[in-house]
Image 1 (tube, helix red, strand yellow):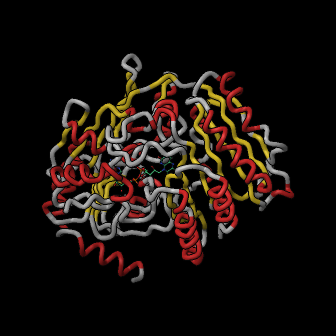
Image 2 (cartoon, rainbow, N blue to C red; image 1 turned 90 degrees about the vertical axis):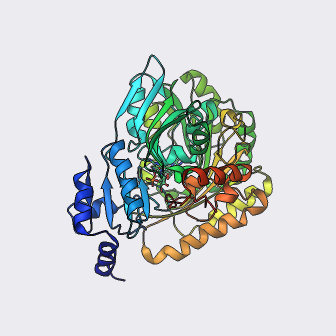
Image 3 (cartoon, rainbow, N blue to C red; image 1 turned 135 degrees about the vertical axis):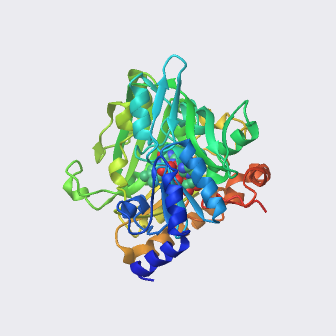
Length: 471
Ligand SMILES: Cc1cc2nc3c(=O)[nH]c(=O)nc-3n(C[C@H](O)[C@H](O)[C@H](O)COP(=O)(O)OP(=O)(O)OC[C@H]3O[C@@H](n4cnc5c(N)ncnc54)[C@H](O)[C@@H]3O)c2cc1C
């Protein structure tokens, strides 16, 4: 179908105009449909490969709007997509022909420094949340790119620079306000609706539309030691072997990555390295700067680096280090993930070979160091799928030309499959473009999640996600 046909199909999927107008009149935000001013902008998400045309976009201004939108979707049998920050690689924040419940206008943030908590509406991004909390020298674990939404990232677990010191985002979640499929606004916490609270901590968007999150805060920074050192690919094997040993002995304050990629033509790298492959160590130390400098120093002593940008840095800057690598709307993205049981010599050799086959210089192979605080929470205490793995592998296909889609997607799938001997089948749903992975992602928590899905969303209204089918 061409764009015009898609637009007409989207329009036809909507209820009669009079019905839509009555719905719109009842919202404090507004409603957009194909052709309306702002519609095209509002249907775009971070992944430039996603081009979907919803029949309606409800731009919610508060929880009452969200509840009205959920009831409207049910009454008219509309497919529902929920948009927080719009960053999921699968583009599940937007749908063809249904209703998008768009929370991007809900960005209120209130820090309570005395209680050490923050309440944030579901359209906020990590950049905004960090800015508010860091004003008080406080932070809660989020992600490593500042324009991702707090909503999708938290509901899927939330891995960031504080994961080993303070756990996942969900480990610091105190409560959510959530509109369930019956249109009711509820509060879920350890005391109120504890089953629902268990399920939203890792179970993604399966259980309703969260309108606000309340997190515990910790003193962090405002300045922390950050390591960001690039080495040439010829030392990558030795570097990854070193990384595995370093990670085994690192204190909880350190959360590190090893990343295989291609040197961009930027002045900070020697000109003769442009276009060659690199291995990058990126690590944050969430404690005093001098202690951090000592703890991260070994990562900086593997021979002559291509570039070493390590320095004490404001935590909010650390949180934005990778932002420029992930422009919204411009690039096409397809990502996959697997928990690695170990970083053995054979696994390292395989990773290096797969990295060398990347069809796009923008693509990377990322190894996340796990462990520490996130691994000390019980496997069944939250719905999150796996906590005991020492590493998470992220295979990121990032490219620009539509004609290159097939080659890049095939590489990401092949690379992930080739790591099967070194990885459990479990993936991290937040970093997964694939579908139908829920059973494999949740392991022993899967059955309890499905039972709760049956209780809270028996008709599977919320199904554009890593779906837990109720039957
Ligand atoms: C550049 C980039 C960097 C990333 N870095 C990290 C990282 O460091 N750590 C990490 O853990 N993950 C990371 N991710 C993955 C990230 O966690 C997911 O993409 C997450 O879905 C982003 O949240 P969002 O609100 O922007 O997503 P959206 O695309 O808006 O939503 C994704 C899905 O989440 C659900 N959802 C969203 N909002 C709500 C809500 N309010 N109520 C109910 N369900 C909702 C819906 O099912 C929706 O389809 C990164 C992703 C990108 C693109």
